[in-house]
Image (cartoon, rainbow, N blue to C red; front, side, top):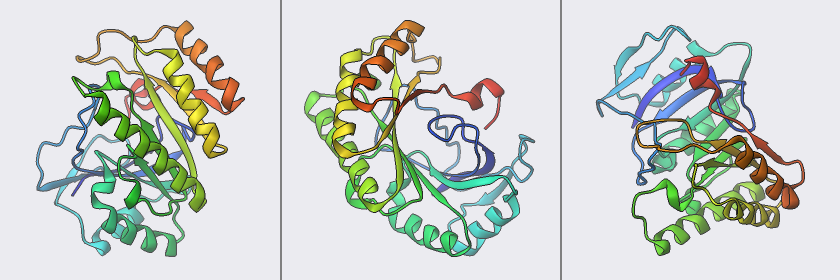
Length: 246
């Protein structure tokens, strides 16, 4: 269920640069062409016990409440901002995460959900949440009907989190072939929900990516989105990758 636990900085989005403890869950029904999740052994959970060391200790899959809390307590530092449930898609394990969140809140921790938003019915309260809004070009041969359903669920997830009082924001990965007008329409839909920040993120180079967006395209997209979201639009790259951090 859990593939990795480590302490690092948030490398993207609204809280970029903040200190987090990341609890990474295995598996995702989607297959985005830029995905960086690599799970080698479904029976093992890796824990970087000394942050920044790059050295991991392997455990049998950690899903027991006491074991997880013990690991988190040992990784806690004074600058800690929140605990991130990330993936993969963490809401595949929504009931267990709800259980973890209750315990963590009782211990004074803040929680942050990082999700693709495809499961709005599994959404519960988190202090912070980021929903990755997908674009059609993020997939190979996804049909428009399937994509439209996914997008509607992403918006439902954002609205539900917003209505619950979570500090929720949206992220969109921008490709070289992304149509700025499509992203503008996303900004308009977000503005209809409420005060939602949109983080546009240039895709990181990898083997599956042939073209990345130009600086002009990124700025043009920000300007178009600003017509609906004002200054609630930011552009962040994956800073942790530039720094060589987890």
